[in-house]
Length: 438
Image (cartoon, rainbow, N blue to C red; front, side, top):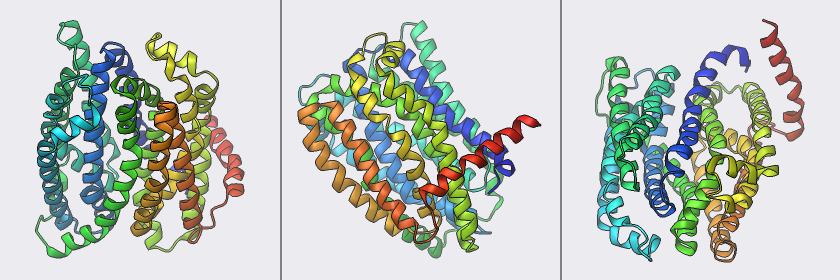
């Protein structure tokens, strides 16, 4: 895998996945600094439930679409199956949230610090406006139309910040409810653009075929179950903090965790590029190509995240003071704990992407169970005693354990070693020198 051949798509992919980082930075100044901690904590809870549900829907219907649309000449039946499964899942999820609203309020806001029941009422609208844009992004990724993905995401992420800014200037921005309404508006605008940019991809013949449903279901059910476990791990930290430490502690924890969005950005870039790449390389039984790409990807990604680790580990107090002006300074130990994800994420993202591309979805499911089995007891033990810092330590340790397990498994198929990854530093330096010499 030569970096130069993929630099164009890679740059658009990085630009696209930089949007959440820009969004997160703008969110700090326009939302987190402005909203009272209780309002921000209430928003974080609703957002976490929304992300949890959309992640599961993506696993069931959209991630399989990315794989099969990249592999199949006639992707029409898979597009149809994905659209139908997505809308069914989101419909069931909306109904479940409506019926279980009172239970969610009792679990996550027993002291009634905010009107969580009212905030939860916005979830069906959030699901509806995100439905097609998420589908379009998955389909465009399969076809390597990364530039179009960028513009769809730009309308949402940058549009949200722009609307928040003007709402503030107009004196119309004070509560978590205001943030949710703006999110719905931005998602709707992003969906309209997605409809326009994907029209040409529907030139293929759409049809309902039982075989397509069967293939997506057989692949997607294990991705769904595995990602369910992973989502429990990645989202439940917020719920544990809320249940044991309260809404204000959620605001502090999430203010600290927001700096890990850089890690999430990298993980998503790798997934965007590596799932279709590993799917094709594995179908061609090209082990050498898979191995070289893995070594270079992990090495390059780790070097990219190294400065972030240094800043988060050595200067968390300065980081929080710079961005929050003293509001969440107590989150410094959480930032320091989460900084170690910089060394874990490159390995985890690579191996997880390869498992999907190689069709090893059962193993992803089993690893998800192992992850939840490690993380949930740690959250339950550490959060009541140490608050958000305990939750952060549990998150990092659980990530490390599951990454070691997955890496050991993937070595059955490719000879991936830490020493070979380290040796790729020379390749990265050569690539950089080549780019600057032009």
